[in-house]
Image (cartoon, rainbow, N blue to C red; front, top):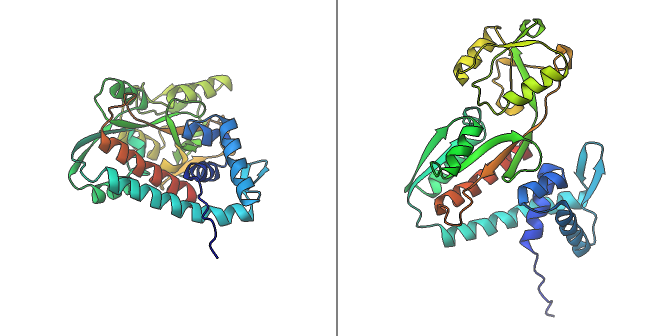
Length: 293
């Protein structure tokens, strides 16, 4: 007996997987450039299609139900196959150079698996890394000096595509005591550091006096001052070196706001095809990292 084939909309599955990874419809909407209402509607369509409830909500956000867990693995497989087919049919002839802008602290965390996979798939493409603070990379992208950028920005509405949202944490020397000093010695990479306004706003709001150890340093100098217990700094939780300490609530330092890691491609429709393909590898690497944590 013939059974009518039923097709699953991969767009709905992509919305479902993104929502599951970010445990938030708001964050998924930012990442997918949709409204929160559109994300909610697409999830509801999937639930109606399978006659299942896919998410429940608790105080920490959205959580997958048993049916949601069953769907998630298969949805990833289908989307991966969809993306592989798209890549094979549209990007096999990519050559040339791609200039990727990225903050210094992200170079050794999320990027290696994405760049390795891209280089394996496209050996004829040369990747140039342009490392700078996020505000500087924003200007470089607008000027056409780079082809795409991964930027650190305060979490919330953005014109970029949200790849991850992370805690901004205070970092100090293992067993150190500098966090107790007043004024608090703070080391930031430069006056263009994306975290600088958030750090000083939090200190100001809680009445904590501070002094800067660097006005224009570099990431190695910042790490060195923290290791020598000469200053504290603030980094994304995933980028904290293993030999340094995340300073918790017992440090009496004010809480810091979360930051998003956002992907930007040129606004023009004539973006480098290789940049679009590298962006896809970055999306996969970030999604994989978020699942592991």
